[in-house]
Length: 219
Image (cartoon, rainbow, N blue to C red; front, top):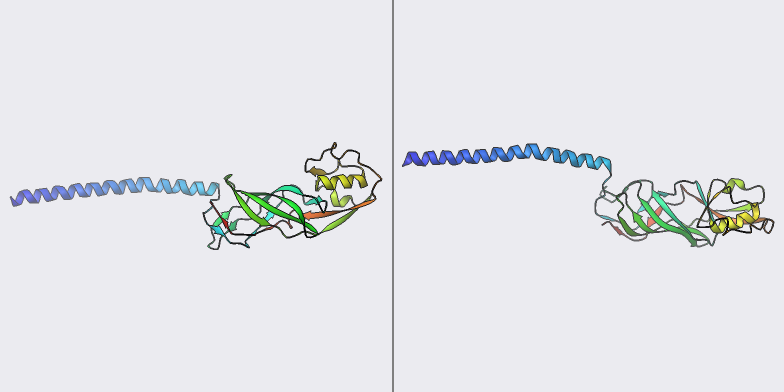
């Protein structure tokens, strides 16, 4: 009877050992490739961590394509900005990756213009509302006939600004017009009706950093 119990215990131990070896084998062959796949995926696209950005957090942003944006002091101009640097929370986790976009508009504010953000579009195309604004930009230039082409050439120009500039310079074909104003909308160009006009000039790479007006909880 004692011998039978000894053999039974040996069999139980052998079965337990075999099960442990099987589990260990599955762990060493299955977990490592899974971790490698996750690491490769992380290198392809910066991953955002769920969390919250505090009110007052600065989001570096630019308008890509032109160095300057020109509009009338009372003009509203829809724009989509690009996030220039990763935005991290207080623990260092990236919540808004570089290359994400922010849609909103430049609108009149306190004697100048200010970008008001409406929608954050992450690199994975996820969208969420955002409350953020730029500083008020009050830089102006006076456009005069024949001597101010340096201001508006190569710039992005709002439809309202294009209309008044065309009255002074007589040709809107030399700059890119934004805001749906084509030749028909600007028709009549009225050359000679104005000798000068004042416009607001935005530096597209320096003036558009945004500050969160309220905390942003990432989804």
